[in-house]
Image: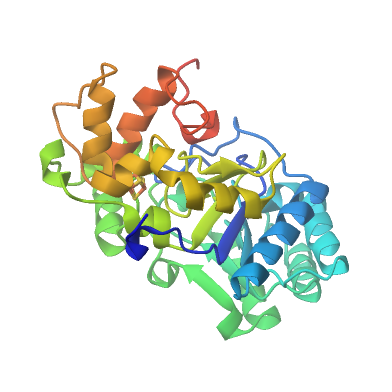
Amino acid sequence: MSDSAEQLAPWEFAGLMLTYRCNARCAFCYTYSGPDRGGWMSAEQAVRLWRELDDHATEQGIVMQIHLAGGEPFLDWVQLVSVLRAARDAGLTRPAHVETNAAWATHDGLTRARLELLDALGVQRLIVSADVFHQEYVPFERVERCVKHARQVFGKGRLIVRWWDFFNDPIDTRHMSTEEKEAAFRAALAQHPDRMNGRAADEVAHLLPLHAPEAFAGAKCDDEVLRSRHVHIDPDGQVFPGTCAGIILGTANERSVGQVWNDLSANWPDHPVVSVVVAGGSYELARRAEEFGFRPQPDGYASKCHLCQHVRQFLFDHGHWPDHVGPAACYASTTS
Ligand code: SF4
């Protein structure tokens, strides 16, 4: 690696995906989280990863920022609290934020008590989802309740709502026709463009203008994969680039997070997916997969990530590079 632009940046922002399980199965989910998906990161595993992330940052001379995500991390409240408590007791960095869809905020007292406990356990910010996709599954009054109490417990600067415009002007799609709902989804995607990864590639990407794969030729992913400084780690210790769930950079189980970073830093040109997307994005990945029989869909793709997810689904379904393309929770189930 002679070009410093092609060196792996230190990981500075890390999301611990406590579970793939979720009460919702949002059409724009960047994995395939839902009630039928599972896995739980134990408090012991979370604290080990947390400590290793902190150690990695210290070695790199930076400060790690860790957030807790899912799936829906509040689905197992006792487990979420045990992770936060164990991290605090171990003297690890304070959690940068916790994400939630607020489905659990069914009563004022319960909501207030939980938010106060998060605050007491050192959570710096709360991120609450509010968008047309989540509100297919989460009654909006629960989001309102969570935000009302979070404003009081965390204060304005420590509460983030994604998205405030939707929160201030919510749209209920539950009684809409398919055409009306698709129009609402299309408008939401125009307002807040998002990655077309995971279920989003299957369920909403077709609502956007589609292009032949050639349109994405030259759209390299070196920024997203090597330089974003952001990773997610799932319940099994599998490390993904921050925006590319389903591309396994390495697994932090028998190896520490620091060892995974060191290995990737030294050997990413040998990683069958990373090497290709860094050099030529999903267009090159598709060309590589054509050697295995992949064929692009005739309707085309909304974005390079839509194409990437489709190629990786093919690779996953056909068992290619299983150490690098997975796990099942990031891909459509072909068995159910
Ligand atoms: S095309 Fe693939 S590798 Fe590139 S940013 Fe999108 S999901 Fe990540």
